[in-house]
Amino acid sequence: MIKDLLEEIKHCRKCLLRNTARVVVVGSGNPDANILIVGEAPGVEEDKQGIPFVGRSGQLFRESISSILDLENDVFITNVVMCRPPNNRITNEHIEYCSGNFWKLVRSMQPDKIITLGRTSFESIILEKIEGGILEATGIVRKIQLNKKIVNVFPMVHPAWVIRNREENMVEWLVEIEGLKNFLQN
Ligand code: SF4
Image 1 (cartoon, rainbow, N blue to C red):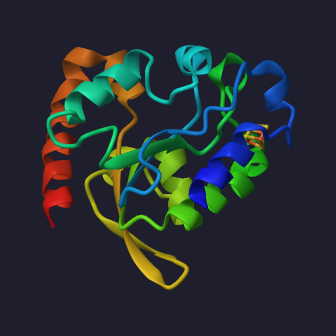
Image 2: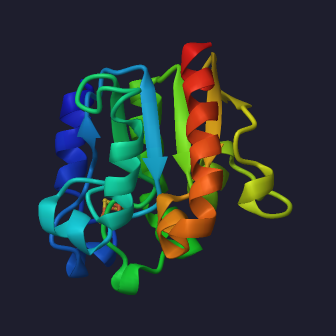
């Protein structure tokens, strides 16, 4: 059933973003997995390949977690907005456009654990704006209710932030990766 939903979303043309995007980047990995990873929106490389998290920051993310998780089998990776926004700028309007598809996917997948990358993805999952910066929220597990199920959410910074100032931000990133290992073991 979830495979039918992914196929349906692939053909979505509900909003104007589809006019400028090459493809709908629905996700990658195993849609029957218990872990969902949520980013923000596809960038140039993701739009070109039709796969999320394959650009520079995506590669950092994939390399960092490949020893912890099998990215083909253990997880499904998607974005809050599934078509590339112009100039890679995601707006509240874009999130609103795609929220129907996004939540249909999350509810249909019913993961046990969700990992969010970046503020936008965290706020979209917990359905509230956070006070302060994302760095004050990262590494602290939040619980959300998904239908009748309680799901643990682990917020992380977006890897693009790490890439922007690799030397300084890598320290924080490595701390978060350690936190992620603990989160996945519990
Ligand atoms: S951004 Fe979302 S709602 Fe808009 S066309 Fe793409 S998949 Fe459909």
